[in-house]
Length: 197
Image 1 (cartoon, one colour):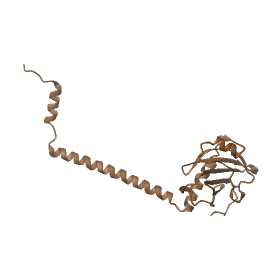
Image 2: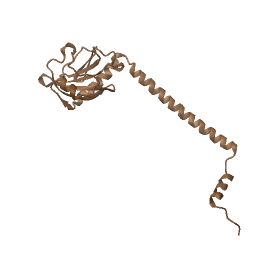
Image 3: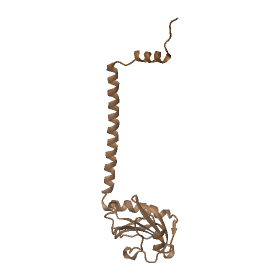
Image 4: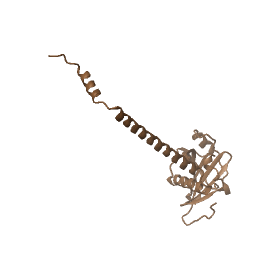
């Protein structure tokens, strides 16, 4: 009886004998390269589409951008979330919201729109993906107001002085120094405000 070779050698020899010829191997490699190239092109196309859509959103005309920001502000205003920091003064609120990269001070709202409103407190939020303060205010007759404060940026340029009536609230935008403000004030259902700009 002859000496048997180890099983590993037998298996290796079997698969080597069954190997691909050069032409078939070249064909498989070419197919793999085509699939990889198509995958890279699809990813590149997706990246280009994403970049174009993002840049279009940044360059929306002011009125479209104002409507988009107003809708975001209104959504947060209507949630009516509790304040994370109760405060009776702007100084105390600024100390409570210490992660803000700016100082919170009582703003000069257009047409004195904050007259008659009392500061209740605030929380962190965002506007157009920027860190912001969401400040809760209470007015006469139970009227609610929410003030949003963030740093000026390209995404918010061109909104200074705009007003957007929304469902049940009017939203004013203004700039004061390096800060951007958005103020949402509840309006009675029957009131309409034609002062949109």
